[in-house]
Image 1 (cartoon, rainbow, N blue to C red):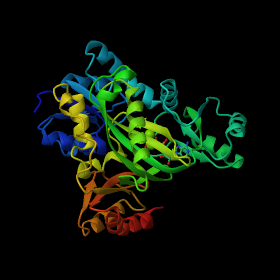
Image 2 (cartoon, helix red, strand yellow):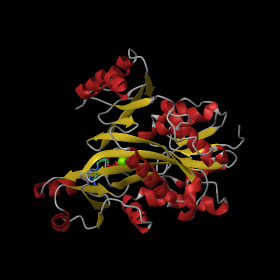
Image 3 (cartoon, rainbow, N blue to C red):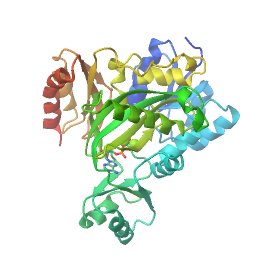
Length: 399
Ligand code: ATP
Ligand code: MG
Ligand code: MG
């Protein structure tokens, strides 16, 4: 389909599903991660690189093998990506600047605000002194969220502070990390929209023609970790859905480079929308697209980053669910024993319409993403009834 070889920094579950999409198009993907990483297990014909996406030498080794570089995680060495881009300007997609801004959540917020995108009020908190935090809290009120600026994922990096008595514990828990404070978002619901950017739109004026959004998903988090997504979002008006898609596209247009972006949002009590955060890559809240959309987020990412295929994502290609499709995605996390999560997967085998994705990770640990299940049905009610037994098991093994 395209002779260019793609390199991906990171070989976890997102990289694995990216490789699955690439196989369907006969496109070769080399993976940089530890030996036997999930994405390498299903991709044995290609030579991979063993190492870390946070190490310059390893990224260079991947770069030497590949025509295009992309990421499945934002916590990568962007200095070396910058150097590579100086020599080969369009090789890294999305651009190293985008990844660098997004990997620091506070910088990401500043960037959004500079571009006129509404986002949660955020205050840098460099000194890590309880007194300093109390002063910020006096201004914002309780609860508020103390967050790590960097290396954050799956809620590891978030501490919800509910009263003054929790301040010291919050600082002790996140100590040694660069921190900032976020005003609490009193949301009625969380929404997520995947956006695909098919050209390198450097100016905000060109976003209308270069970005397309997928349908609006409702996301449900527990302890800052995504548990479920419902698509289309339940009980959300057409107007709010199109506002969410428009906001997502506008936000993504503020960043350079091509590819898929995951945009997480809060729908507040007054029906206004605030951006929570943006991922410069496919995202957990877009897993449902594999079964429920004409084009999955992984295929869209692949096509968008490849120069010869980028213009094949025609308007409308990503906006639709396949007809009569309601999708629920349930994350399967590790539980109290290394194999607890398999109880959920086995139960899913008995439910017609449930599609199981296991990621090939060795041992389950509490909170570790081991797999997910997508259930599609002609009505949301039917999907909810069918998946409920699995949610019950997930709740039972949660510790
Ligand atoms: P991801 O795995 O999506 O990258 P993350 O670790 O970067 O997650 P966030 O997206 O910042 O974490 O937060 C995770 C969840 O915590 C949110 O989806 C939301 O449920 C809750 N949360 C985060 N920030 C706030 C806030 N300011 N107010 C209320 N809830 C919040
Ligand atoms: Mg995040
Ligand atoms: Mg998030």
